[in-house]
Length: 511
View 1: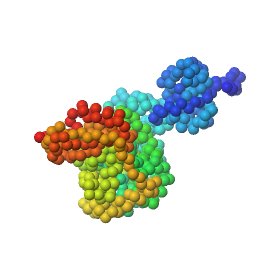
View 2: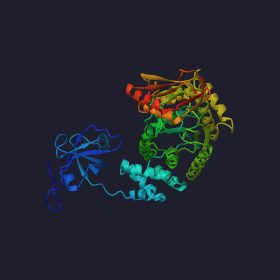
View 3: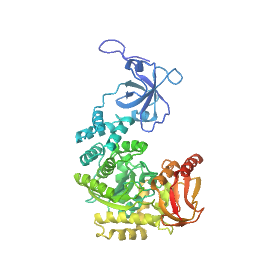
View 4: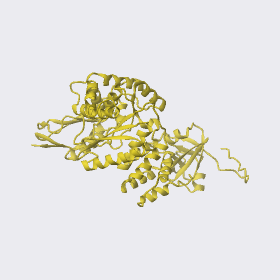
């Protein structure tokens, strides 16, 4: 390989390395692999798990370095590249890259200050979020920041600073409408898939509702996961705008439109840590709503012993924080506390929840009434703040919009505009879990039910999850199934059933 001449000293400059595409999938983390005895690793003093800057034709990414010995995988002048790094750099076979130490990430000093219990100002959050979106934070750095924000919870000022920082690094939409409504659920309640129904009802009544949703963080399904089984959700900004201008609403994945790109990075790490702290939650919700151009937002706060929000006091505190932060950005927020004592509907998992959504919109005789009523309650609140219904009259209008078929017609039109309505998949593996005694169902553990659905494969496996056969207060016979586990593979089903066998109080029956 040719070596360039150093224009200052006349000595040969360090050579670049040819890339080799390894087909290595590392989720979202850029990774490169080099020989431990190559010139770069030796002269730069690089070791495994070092952070390196990889550059090619004006593009650069910060990557984690791993090393190999011997010439079995790579030659001395080659660098192996993960799929994420390959895509970010826009590489082609035969390209050359330069590998060097990355610049110092100054904002990590603020993360360290936060770890030691110090509050951060707006400038610190701006710098952290900019570096996060630029890919300068490793997963270790991200985990440290998120953990520090959980151990000492963000106060109102910090939450507002983080919200603003997350808005500033992404795209921002504006609409030619005086009122733009949105809706969000803080989560923690399996099967609570009201959003597609709410959007259909609200848009059918002439309001603008550009709904961008997240994928699951710690749950078996997020709205984007469920909606993806019904229609495309990876809409770019131009497509999202076209859909909303045509139909008045959409249900899209927020990560595809880059309205709050830092949030999707945080969500990925939060999912691995299995944490979802209040300050991050508020910043996540509000940054996406503000970036989407919303003026009025309805927020569903399910409250229950095994929901994310355990009691009324905690719900009131969360609602107060949401309102306090949203006021700083001129966003009107209406918080609605709902029953979080048990899963909503029958399905838990992307496709199973989608079938419930379709049943409600199509007014089938077996549509889950709890999902229908909850969606009407939230849609009614949106219709009231949007000026389409008087105070206390929104739910009635929502029920009417479902009953006369306008919501179903609007939902079909939205799906068609997003790329076409499709049929959700079904699982090939199904297994019942039966009651070991007769009696009345007195408790359903939301967290363990959600865990069971995730072990069955949800949300990655779209057809996987749980189909509930009972609700609180139901009388059940010994041997009667209280739920069915759905999986796409026998192995995932086995994992789920093993957990169910030791979980104990998934569902409690009182004789």
